[in-house]
Length: 85
Image 1: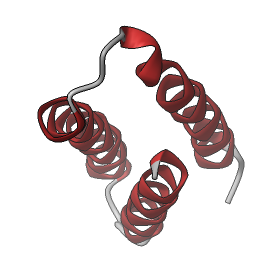
Image 2: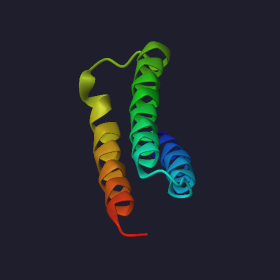
Image 3: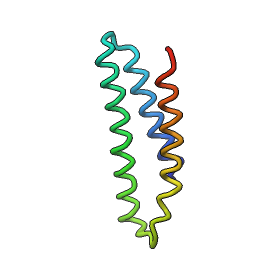
């Protein structure tokens, strides 16, 4: 479930990033990309809170795989955003 969520969210952010590349103003482009990353973080927190309320896990170890995937996807996303166009 975490893998599918991270994949969909990364596709959303990649689409928004691609849209920001077409902007003529570089300042607006950077703000747009940072907003997309903030949006991904917000949706990730929302996903975790929803999972806690629906699944009612007994210990906190359930969150480790999610954060590992989140870190990996963030690293890949940052790498590709920093690449030259």
